[in-house]
View 1 (tube, rainbow, N blue to C red):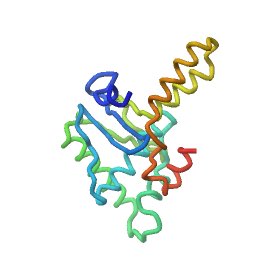
View 2 (tube, rainbow, N blue to C red):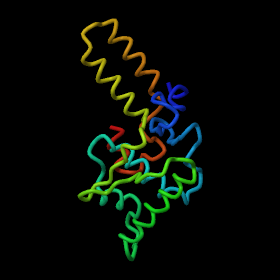
View 3 (cartoon, rainbow, N blue to C red):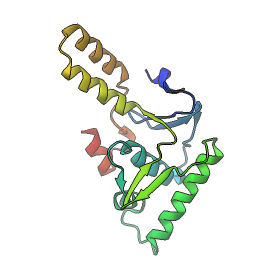
Length: 170
């Protein structure tokens, strides 16, 4: 299933997000996430905003808490604006179409509807819910097998130390 998702079932201009097992972010088959620790703020921001995109967004405060933790940051608002700016520049540099990727509204951060997203965790959850509601035992089994194939590991397993990720994993 992940191999199929890599290029986006909804077309090549779909942002493909892998949250089960390891984290990856692909646009047109190209990875947008590097391996350096310095990129963690971009990674954390993208994980949260993309995962909560269909749930009304994520609060700016929750994202700031993950990004800055207990560190003493003089001007959190300025630091946060800088992270958003750098994320936008990075997405543009990697070939994503120009857009207001992350929209701020009423203290919430939401992903733009201009760039479609496919997230493996959403696909897995949708398959499980569909199986639960399916009346036909044959179709239910088919959906459950597809869900098993879609499951590639714990939700953001490498990031289990983040409270939000551990909560979602449960």
